[in-house]
Image (cartoon, rainbow, N blue to C red):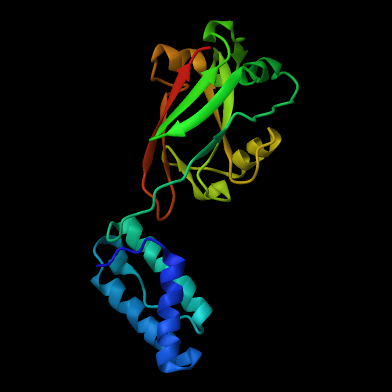
Length: 224
């Protein structure tokens, strides 16, 4: 089966081709619906269980076709997409009582991602950062924050370590001045630097969304 790497452009091509051949939206819709059903019947895994399209117009069929492509990617019949990650140090938490964590965040001189490794470079040694009690099981560590985006907006379409991000995560990102599509990753710099890969701040995490690969990222701390 041919790999669909750009769903929207391929759908437009399919609709344009059928429309040119069959003329009307109704005829085009019928032919595209036939194609969707044929592909669904021939796909392995979860995609086999897809129902034929019942859309009444070409716009509805386009949505159904794109949904089919996502289902095929999730099932493994088509190669899923790679995330495009953007990271930022511009986390500005002005809530009372969080000044020490914000102090640590402002000691980040740069943050960058390459080949699944997020490197946080500090302007000082980790030992010079302030202790911050994050509460509960998170404990007191050299906490700091970075913003992460992989182009999924809203971020509630993302799963972080297998758990769906929620409206609470959206609110948290907004509170620290991050743009839509970003979430906050709080990092216990002392644990990551020491190689302590246990909770509360593991040095790695996974992200997944419909149509995308389940991708692992690792955090690295570089002292200044």
